[in-house]
Amino acid sequence: MTRLTDAFKNKKAFIPFVTAGDPDLSTTEALIYAMEEAGASVIELGIPFSDPVAEGPVIQEADNRALAAGFRIDALFDLLEKVREKTEIPLVFLTYANPIFTYGREAFFTRCAKASIDGVIVPDVPFEERATLLPFAREKGIALISLIAPTSHERVQMLAREAEGYIYLVSSMGVTGVREKITTDLKEIVEKIREVSNQPVAVGFGIARPEQAAQMADISDGAIVGSAIVKLVAKYGKTAVGPVRDYVLSMVEAVRV
Image (cartoon, rainbow, N blue to C red; front, top):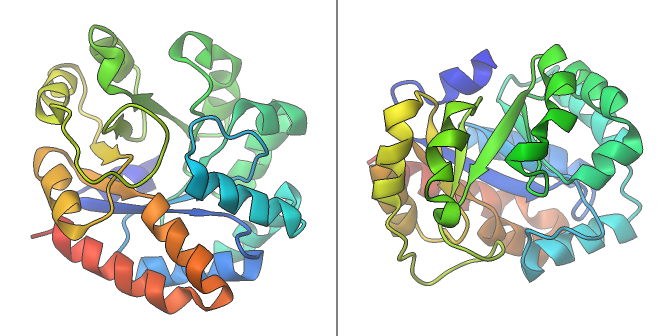
């Protein structure tokens, strides 16, 4: 988990998300290098799944495109082992319980370790059920990253105490997607987290514009953006690398001002 810790040292982090295999894995590889070059601190990769319950239509459609193009998880693992020959940027999977259990928990985390994956986020596994995955992740030194939602209230500190890697603070209720305005009192939630945890806190869900990213980074340790980037990939397809690099660069500059 050292790479994740180092990603937040002495700076605000910008964490971009892309759906692996959209439009194909060679584009995903190019996007990883481009986003790192633009200054991303961590990269989140979505593993395509047919029923991604936490995702809005933008990421659902990306999952569908990747699956229709023949996405296979073994091919992703193979690709990331190759990627690791060229970069040490922290890589985090966002996936769901079904793909992990279908693949086999021990096999999944073994392959994660082989590809030097730093963390895994599983939105549909609640805190009370994380023991179904935690031993497998810990055995391989992989962080099981916690999501904390605005409705957590009294659960915030309970979740924060057990957090590892970094804390993904959900900006607002609902599924992923760009939001015009984020009205949740996130500052108060971050303060509650800080009382019990030294883990970095990054805010995600709904962030799309540099000023939003700057606002979120001002009250936390960084900003996470998914749907806005996935929209660029949907628009430009295999030529998305340049537009995504430029977008990530603008967001990195915003969070570090």
